[in-house]
Image (cartoon, rainbow over all chains, first blue to last red; front, top):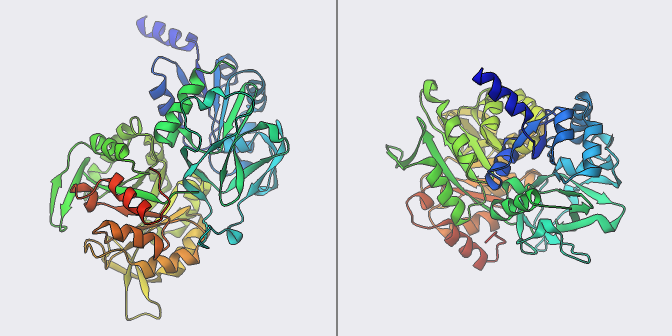
Length: 228
Length: 254
């Protein structure tokens, strides 16, 4: 009886944050970091469209190759849930979870979800050198400075994060939005690329806040408290 | 710009972090979570755990360590040692590792590197290469396996290129000649590999002082430097190492 009640309670429990699981890669880092910054919130890793629809906030991560991510998302019938969430509730895209929001990726010549106009490009390793002429590697891996693109007023996700703070990256592709107004931040490798986008209830980043120590945890905490 | 990374390496055996003294005596170095936190506080850019457990019975214990560390330390964690199958990679990633390092198995079964990279993404596959200078081959540095005991007949530079092709997202290069010597990295080896591949390389083996870290980047072309003893014995903190590198014109995260 008690067991049944517990089970029933847990399935009825309000979902504060749903981490969308479409079978690509490891979501443990993301969920652990969210639990760390929001110990009183119910964080759920889920591939259930009903739970995604019921959750108050959505985190949309992604690892691996974008064509595989889109395929796996569709295989689980999650495209509509993700699109609906991206248009309606606090939504945080991470890494491939940012790239998938665009129309097209050079990676596997794949179509994305098309929520934003623009494309995903690969860093051209053979043409990249730093100011001393040293070769720059691809993937772009490690800690790089993130310059906030503050328009009229500060975005809540940058609260208590210094402009130019370093975040941890690991990626070979970057997004190129058609609309410059959605650019929330940029980094340089060696040229400027878009490292965050912001529009209404949606914020998405190329770097990994869940692996970016203090600055990253601050961003996740800002997201958990964000009221767009 | 992108910062060069400093990565402290922790040896784990039977579920405990240990310090080796001249490879002979292993001493318990304390609680893995506490040590990981300390390095995180000092500004370590990543942490690498190397499982040196001899018996396969106790190898699963590293999973508990990684689980505990990953729920309290939020920087990238790499785990290596005894990774034989794609299933081992999956288990480590599920425990909270961000990258898994593959060494001997990459030589015995290169297909496993490709399988793991296509299943989990190249970003989480590190191939560790142990190399030694040789006179009896038409090339300069040979790949060794089984902790440096077995020669493979493979040219380390060619091998590095092949591993990057198969899907290694990063290469960890350890010079067997330098490991434990404290006379500095093998910079010519690292430079040869760094020039040959597009993926980042981590230099390992031989660090005795902070200038060695600077040389590893400037002369060896390393994107990251890994060290164990200079940090474990409290000779230097990670922060001191970074300050020294910065003073010498290297971009670091401080």
